[in-house]
Length: 414
Image (cartoon, rainbow, N blue to C red; front, side, top):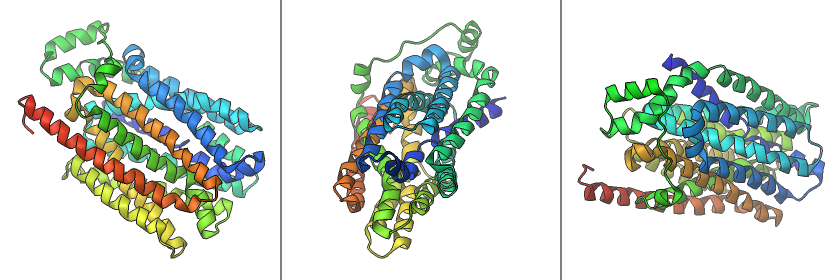
């Protein structure tokens, strides 16, 4: 039964990835149809990001009240409906309006599922689950490219993805019996790990199914040593990732002269890199720690950004986006999976909720690159990515030092 639940969670991560690469792949065509400035992609992306920030910050309270199943099933359905409305829109401002439920649906499910996996599954599962996100994100540009090359246009691409999301939503909805007991187990996982509750007491409480711990206040979360730096690290990571996703197609068109349909398909190079990287990273976690793999990711990221900046033709650009994806692969799942061990299992849902919020705020900041693109400076993309990477590396190392000191001060082994 538990294995089937894990399979459902894998499907949920695919559903998370499906919409994420659509806007970047479709935007050149959408911009021409709506006759709006190039930077207007930022408006849609910012509205989506704002919705995810709100739902991520509320995830601790929502998950404790409605459970992971309730949050996940409602969120996936909300995203599916929003995508369907996208496909039916014939006005730019309708897209902006439907971006609100689009974002709200993504944030809650992301935080709830990431915390459940961090608490209950090994690091390799975290990598493989985020690999499933990459599978969804890699499929989308191809679907959009085929729709653009055919008669469906960008509307057809969104419509196909909305149908896939609805099927996944139905799979989550009917899986309720699998989640019921797991919901209660999640409540007591942190206390059991810290020796605060015995197995017998947990079993008794599971039968009662009416004890809910109090959500951690936001002010208390920020007082945890190393937490602010960790949140800012997530901000920088997602600013880098979202910039590469959103503006990759536009950069290839401006830099290498690709057509819109070709650029939409080749934009998936980043997603191919991140998907393959996370599949490989799952095996690497058997031998190496999350920290080691995160640092290796930073090195590969730097190499990828360097390749994108080289003026030696499309082959280097494509290889660079693959390398950027490979470098991103271990960073996000590695930091999330280590959260219960680094900050305490009892704090993990609250911490991961705020991590997701800052990640999505980073996603909001990334579309600001559109202002440069609008000014004809789209070729500054590598420098933009390099700046976020440098700050991210510094912040992560500060978190490592602060948590080591906190553990030593608490009399724990480092």
